[in-house]
Image (cartoon, rainbow, N blue to C red; front, side, top):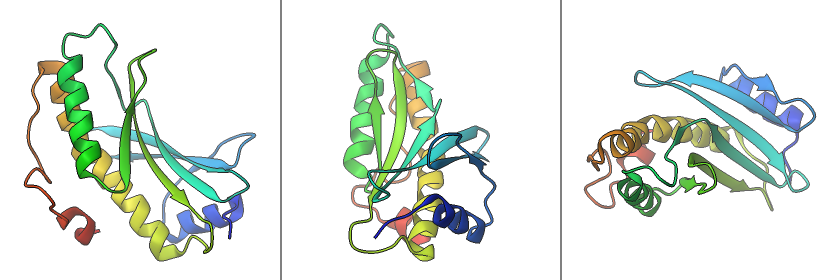
Amino acid sequence: MTCNQAQLVALLEAEDLQYYLIPNREGVMLTFTGSGHLFQFKIYIELDQRFVQFKSVNFLACPMDHPNLLTTLKVLGEANFRLRLMKFGWDPTDGEIAAYADIWLMDAEFTEEQFGRSIRAYMSILDDEYPKFKAAIDAGTSSGGAGDEGDDDSTIDAI
């Protein structure tokens, strides 16, 4: 099964979300305000419409020569170990930290329920993880937060 631009738009509208179409590419851009911060992300449709990716835009950055890089990478690694849907990446060429959620649509369509849970989880996790990354970059601290108790599934169940 696949997901095309029209289906993606219908899924977004079912969630009552505002979006912007990305010119010359199948995908959309969204903006939301979390706990005191504005977030932007894109949803791309790729690989013959069988792959959907959520990707943050200008989430954070920590350049190679930053004094708190090691702490930031530790926070990134811990988040990747703990989280299921979302993964964080760090680009050593420019220090960009991006959040990804990859969804393969091989043998089923992207249902409204699956999409709704995916997009709400993505936005919630982006907002929840931001202060941890920000503290690591700014102060070199790895502050705790939701999910630090181990295999806590409360974030998934709440969405």
